[in-house]
Image (cartoon, rainbow, N blue to C red; front, side):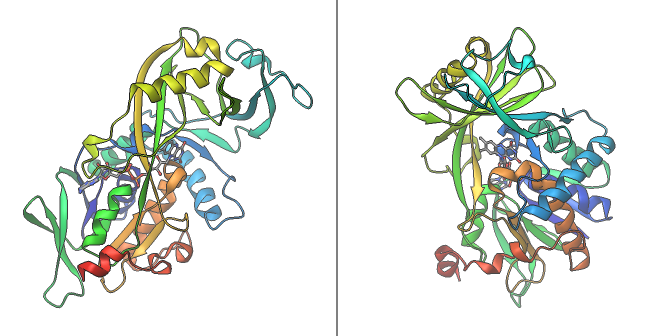
Amino acid sequence: MRVLICGGGVIGTATAYYLAALGAEPVIIERAGIANAASGKSGGFLALDWCDGTPLGPLARRSFVLHKALAETLPSDYGYRTLDTLSVTATDDSESAYAHPALLNWLADAAIVRGRLGTTETTAQVHPASFTKALADAAVEQGGRTQVGEVTGIQLSAKGSAAKGVVVGNELLEGDAVVIAMGPWSILACNWLPLPPVYGLKGHSIVLRPAQPVSPHALFVDVQDHGGNQHSPEVFPRPDGSVYICGLSGTEDLPVDPNRVATDAASTDRLLAITKTFAPQLAQAEVIAAQACYRPVTTDGLPLLGRVEGLENVYVSTGHSCWGILNAPASGEAMAQLVTAGTAETVDLRPFDPRRLGPSPRSAAAE
Ligand SMILES: Cc1cc2nc3c(=O)[nH]c(=O)nc-3n(C[C@H](O)[C@H](O)[C@H](O)COP(=O)(O)OP(=O)(O)OC[C@H]3O[C@@H](n4cnc5c(N)ncnc54)[C@H](O)[C@@H]3O)c2cc1C
């Protein structure tokens, strides 16, 4: 069974990996390079129970377990490790706070630990680009393949009830099933399919290389900058010695071409200025990446995971918002089961059924 997966982010590559494990032949069609977008530029932070109490809870718990299993199975080292996660506030008010000895050499005196948000049992991290590529490589190793190209449409059978394949550039690529996994660019598929809209929310991030190693603690920080504005940067030291920091959003519209996602010097400077308020030495470190990306969001904040209405072999997996790296394994596993066997065994996909949201007005116009 050849399955055409549109998009080589973490959701597409995880789906490909689990499809290949079930004996299918996944073909990942990617316009700008595996992990070029949010899947290569995100924090890569993972949490077992932070989605509990929401429909995402079981997906996240299953994913957290699968992440551990994948780190033991996949041949490449992509920086998976468990770590403690702390809440930090930069303030003079030290009431109910405690000093954390491991953080003293890299945080400002005014930065105090408010509490523990996660332990090595409940929080972990990966390097997201390396993880996404490791999944793609493992899918190829098991009989799948990747193809560079821009998906520009879908070709339906004469009866219109199934897809014959997808249009890549101007050519038809035939397959037995199609999975739309283009992150925020899945909105383009609304021109071809009755799909709810997916939007892109821009976020800036920087990766620093400090001269001195910092302790393995993920930090969720609350700070006020000198202008009195409140910020909530997220700080993820990585096993390779670098430190990833995000927490600054942007308002620019998603460009149609993923290669055109731009960052700007002003956003980098602002992130460094925010960093300086709670970790002045870190803010002096070499900037090894200054980047921006778009996370895919739906109108109700939940992903779209399931079959597309009215088409027997077309599926969608997108809209994972701020938890796409975490939730990729269980999403990919369940989608692979759905595509090959008609039902997902490991997670209940009903809360994520794309039919819960009406099709985009674009889809109506395309019909
Ligand atoms: C700043 C930031 C920090 C984040 N931190 C975390 C975190 O710590 N933990 C976590 O779990 N999640 C995090 N996320 C969320 C996570 O990054 C996303 O949910 C996830 O990467 C989405 O993956 P995706 O595969 O759906 O989309 P993408 O990564 O956007 O991949 C979609 C792919 O489709 C391709 N494409 C687009 N158009 C076409 C076309 N026409 N034809 C073919 N291919 C096409 C693109 O080139 C791209 O490679 C963060 C997001 C942001 C923005």
